Every structure is written in C-alpha cells, then in structure tokens.
Length: 278
Length: 113
Image 1 (cartoon, each protein chain N blue to C red):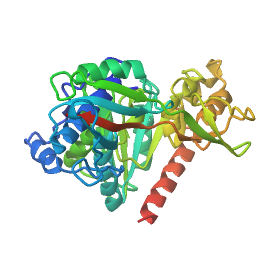
Image 2: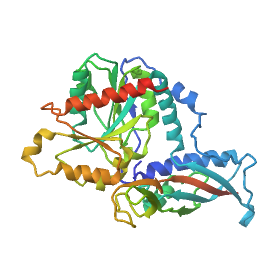
Image 3: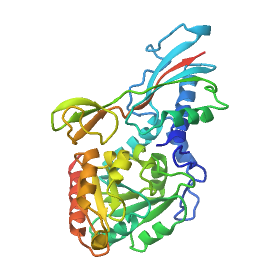
Image 4: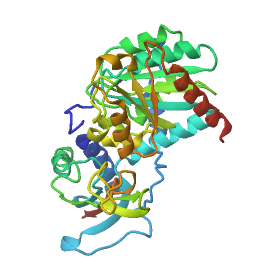
C-alpha cells in the first residue's frame, strides 16, 4: 500500500513456529478497542465538538489526530510490554543488501548465552533470514510482509505472541530492506539503528533523510572492503550528522571482526540502561 | 513516503470519527502534512481518492495544509524555518540543525452531514 514503491499489504504472514494453530484473530479482536494513541483528540461526541453551520447543514468536527495513530497506539503498547520485560528492542533498518543479517548473525554468535536474545525477521518473501538466525541457536521468527515494504506495530505484536519476549535481554527486529517506508512506522522499539555499508553512496543520508533523522545510531558495515573502494567514510558520517546532529556512529566489519567489540559494547551499554530504567 | 498506506490509515480514522459523530457523509477533510514529513501532497491526493471509494468520504474535498519545517540551529542558537532536512541554516549557514516541527501528519478537521 505504498505510493512510493507501489507495494501492497496483501499476503502478510507471520511464520507459524510450532505448527499448532494459534490464531491471531482473538488477539486482534481483544485489542480492537484500544486507542491510547496519546494524541490530543477532542471527541466528536463530547462537549468539544464544533458546530459550524455551513452549507447544507454540514458540521465541522475538530479531530486533531495523527494519521498513523492506530499504528502509534499499538507501538505504545509494545513499548510498555518491552519496558515491563526489561527488553531492549532495536529496529534495524537499511537498504537491501547492506549486511543486516550478516552483522546480526556475527553479533548473536559473539553474545553467545550471555543474556536472552530473540530476532524478528521482516522480509517480503522466504524464511531464509530466520533460518540463518536460527542456525546460531537464537530463537527467530520470520514475518513475510507480502507486498508490504515495512513492518508495522501490529505485525511485531503478533510475532511476539509466537516468539516470546527475551526478558532482560535484547530483541532485534530486522526490518524489510528499505530506507523509505519503515521510517514512519514506530514498532515500539527503544531505538532505530540504521545500517549503511561502504559499498553504498556517501550521500545516502541526504537521499533518505527521514530514516537517518529517525535513527539513534548508524552502523557502517563492510569496512573490510574499504581498501578496494573509493569511499570517503568521513563524508558519509558528515552527511548523516547534517541530517541528525546527535546520531552515534560505529564502523564494523562482520567478516574481519573489526569494530565488533565496540558494537557489542554499545549493545551492552544500551541494555544496561534499559535494565536500570523503570 | 507512504501515501497509500497513509490514505488507508486515514480512512480508518475517518470512518471511526464519522460513526462516532453519527454522520452520514464526509464532505471535506482538512489534513496537516508538514513540509518535512516526506509525504508528497500530490501522491496523497491520488491515494486518498482511491482509498475513499465506497466509504463515507468518497468524493470529499481534500484540503491539505503544509506547515513549514522548523529547526533549532546549534551553531547560531536560533529557531529557523527550513525547506528540507539537511538544508543549511538560513541565518548562519550552519549544518547542525535539530528539527522541531513540520513533520506532522494529522487529520485536523472533517466536515460532515
């Protein structure tokens, strides 16, 4: 349903991990009434209603609601859920092929059994990425968005019902490879982490400013390839900070292992902050 | 960004609000789409036209207000108006700007009968 890339929302599917039919529908229905979107909303039935007597007896209703308020409301529920479980939820976003899954696989291997981990994998088709994650021993579930080009809060909520939440640990949500659409859809994560590889252009942050503006951290991947490329990493960072002056930056190679210790340190610190905060 | 997705979400809101107000039909929608929201107003108009079909807002007039982007410049410590993310400060040319407004996407008002 995306005006930019022409995708639709049909055929959305959360992988059935256990092959028993835990139907989503009851879960959806139970939450249908929730509209705690936090936006100021003067209810049309309430006293705040404006009665404008325009043409043909029409009324003017003051609504003042965010267009994505439904998604934002579910995201807020997810966020409360993560807070209660003291789970650090990270929304990993990038263009296709930036190396999200490779970075994730290497990260999970290095964390080992130190704290609980789980992964939600978003892709339009196939369970290939979830299979790669599960090979590390970490629980993972695949969400296939069908024609959809991004994950939304409801998909994440449904996935968590089947996957379970890693309490006191880290949940990685690997979004669909796309730097445009996922920027506007809050999933309830603590932070968006944007991943940019050195094989992409240094001007990516300027071309896809919405995503770089929304992210708290940029991880520059595939740095082992730098000797073979005309890539000015400083310009990439400069452009990212032009869009988002407070964005943190890490440089890693999942292949050579360079920079992985700093990324793991960042994760440890972010997790410690989550554990410390109410 | 995501015009058809947004239009679909918008129609959900419109249906909800129209039902709550016991309205038969929606004749006008007023949206606020900030200049930094990454929404193309033209594409949104098209998408709303498609998404509204068969619902209470079919054929409704669509008014889109586009508030400008506002940002705080960390260099000259002033609130300024900007046309796009990544644009330099119009006062001092600085590049470190914190966006403060102009990224909203809201349904402000509806005219119903």
